[in-house]
Image 1 (cartoon, rainbow, N blue to C red):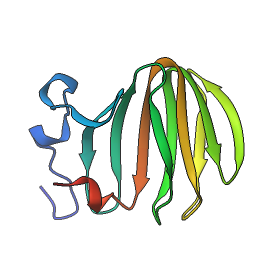
Image 2: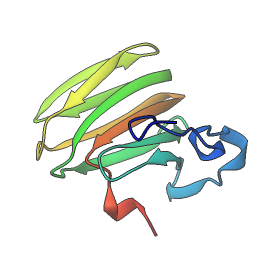
Image 3: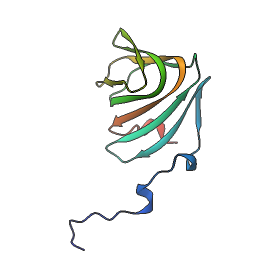
Image 4: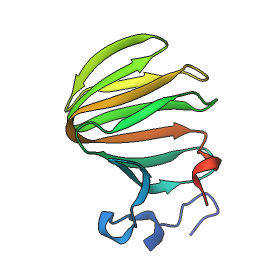
Length: 118
């Protein structure tokens, strides 16, 4: 093997059921799926009425609505998003979400969220 080849190991494959849930708020829990210093993927499950409170961070965030219906707010603009929709949050913009129908958001951050690692 040359020095430019990448070695794939079992840690490159992430199984959903092998990761513990972390309770974030009433009706909101997450699983940190994978990360390195440049990127992080997080699965966030919401019950109807669950709230991702308005917040901001220097990380760039892209979120896929895997399922459910959410009212998403970014920099004062609100939009109803459903399964298959995506939203993009540039660095330091105030954003949050309210779950209108139970569902799952898949968040990707760059760089990784150091504050999520306990």
